[in-house]
Length: 503
Image: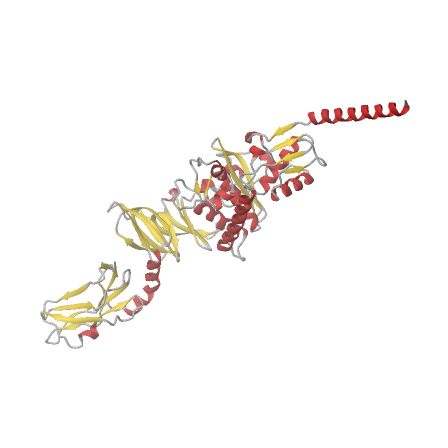
């Protein structure tokens, strides 16, 4: 009888435990991830480091679940730490809130965009791109400010702001990520800010992402720390739309007071930015730079062209000409000169050698793959000019002046076909003696072109012919090195030189 009672007791106990476990399981609650407008984080609040480390490890290893039960079973706390992890690590572009939930037993379910094999491939692609960018724009001797400018300029010049997100879900989500900005080169403000944060932190410049409003619309930008001081920087608003290949600095390294004129954020959640040392940049409408100087023009000064050190010192005027659409290349600034009918000019970076290079009204001047590209208003067509050729001519100008200092210049370079035959006419009969030593063609390196025939036609015309066609795109000089004499020995022409290009 006792044995029967003991068995009955065990059955009742097991049954009771099963009921208790079932009831406990039924009491486990599922909490979906908060909507985007309810997600929050703060750079000034201390988070549970154990939860942080567990979530970071899970996201890095592409785990489906993370157990936080030993540290917290509070959904709000865990989701806040998750948001902090994601904010600190813009390289985690593949997380998906839509498939994320937290259970009251301390289990955080993680969601991802795409399968894990694809994600791993994309992560490697992003890592390689980050290193490639750093190798191309950063040098060991750069200051923090120079690193910031180099990365800021790279992102602005290489990213197109997505005004209409893609219909494809994954592609549409990627515009909010560092991957979308750096790999697809298409992003919205969040993508710009995350790319800035990722790259700058990689090169040792402390950078965080700020979320708030810009002109009343949800927006994201950055706070950077340069030489121990915090600054607000908005790369998105420094990128003109439509994308035109220009960099602005109107929202570069601003104080809280300055950026607050059109940006709103919860100031208590972020470090204060009180320094306004870079205020000089914010008024510049057109800006280019080299390693040491910034060159700029702005409406306040009637678009006169200035230069100054990157730190704002040594400000000086280069020219009073009204300079817009600036392009910097090989120690020269190219610009549209509205003091001379909107024609194309260049000036050396020390303010010397101001020169018109195209006597047409042009617009939309910018740099593209080694060319100056612009719209020729006089001809109503888009055109381009190879900068390397312009630079080569500049480098040879000193040598040209040395060789031809006593020669009369026949004026602006002419453009001629490859089979051009030159004819120089005189009003008296010409002495043909030693004519080939007096009349010849030189190439762009100032070497005589060997396959040139020089003949006299009808006693008064010199005919210059090249046996083989001139090189397309080549630069040449037609030279009369000594005064030509008539048949009586009287000089009838002074030494002259004419530059010509071959199309």
